[in-house]
Amino acid sequence: MLTILTKTNVQETIKSAIASVERLDELVEIQSDENAISISNKILYVSGDIITSSLDWHDTEPPYIIPRIPFSEMNLLAMVFYKLGNHQKAFEFISEENELYNHLLIATHLQFGYEISEDMCAFAKSNLGDSRPKGERSVKAESSHNHCIILQYRNSTTPQDVNALKGLYAEAIASATNDEHRLFTIKHFVNLLIDNNMLSEAEKILRISSPKAISEEAKNAMTTQLATVLMAQLKLPYDTSVLNEIQELQLASIAFYEDKELKVNAGLVYVDASEIANYQEDFITSKNYITKAILYFKEADIPEFLGEAGLRKATLLYTWSKNGSPQYYKPAINAFQDTLKVFKRDTHPQKFADIHHNLALIYSEIPVSPEEKPIWTAFCASSFKEVLAFYTKEEYPYEYAMASHNYATALMNFPEAKLHNNLDKAFGLFEDALSVRSEKEYPFERALTLLNQLELYWLMHNEDEKAEKEKYHQMLEKATSITTIVEDENIIEQANQHLNQLKNLKTILN
Image (cartoon, rainbow, N blue to C red; front, side, top):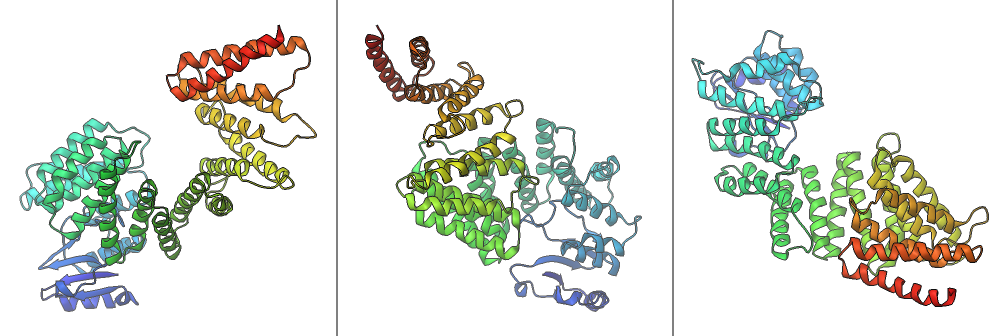
């Protein structure tokens, strides 16, 4: 819904323009009392002979600021359809000679990820000069903001110079005509910092800027971003006071969005709030939050958001199942399988592989009867094959090594196969993992793989005495190497246990 707010004598002209398009009055209301505006509506202001647009703090349209434009019925209708999200219809009311046409063209290209041409960039920069006769400072400020937005969000194969863009943002922030516009530019500057992992700088800017917020929308934007930045900086062991601060910020943001009836925005915060509640070991609250997010995304019919929330729920259930609640294994399987309806092999191949990796781990861990075990191991092997089909050694060496390691570990607990030897297959997969997990690059991961491979050695049979002695020397070498590549006391203790067992074995072999 859109509100046109006006106290001028053009109200009848506005009504006539809206009435000229069939049923448009069902989506647009005309008000002269600002207090009567619905809390969730977008707003166009008509004052005298000028149309201005409210800032979009909720990321429902591109962050490109459409400047003040002359009032006319055609300009008004173009802006109405733009604000309603019908970009194609907006262009029916204005010609290419109209300056508004170029602004809407750039905004539309940003919205849909189309390429921004050099001509568009030149148009956005054309107002950066200092010789504007009227509204000079406002035009320059808007142009500075828009220039940054184009460089940051445009679809381009040329990497953006982050430091150069930071400099441009500093100029845009300094030239802002009021605190509301300044904070709107800061909001997107912070997005740039987050995207480039400059989190401490982003946090500092938000803490300095937040007290200057005037509107509730601006305050909420700062609140939501601060929660995101603090969450991105979390490290084990989690600081309880930081978790509590993030939770407080998230709940304030959720309350704001729900009050504005912006349920999708609230759902996105619910997803993060679920994770924080999980870190706080408040599992019931965590589940309730993610369930609420899923409900909102279902209502809005946004499959990707629904899939992401479903992934979070599935991961949550899997975490519970591994930590003393095995009854959640099957619900976790169902939740992961539901996400495969969204993240398919042909549309989201990496997500598809990651989901199958989680499923493979669950299939290998779920407690079942001996009679059922062959079925679950077959599911496990099938899912691991999907993972390794995507995460190849050449393109994704780290993920390939992790999947190979996990598959090998799972195979150690498989029932005996009729057509091949599961233990031999596991040994080969461990070797594949070790070929990537070098002592220099991944010492910790290599130590873990070596420990699991040592466990496998004890399970494998020897063809003859020569093979037995050869295996003994391999095990001795690998167990000894573990003690030299990591400093983790637990890992070293496990390696020493193997060395003591090998010492006893040597006595028998001799």
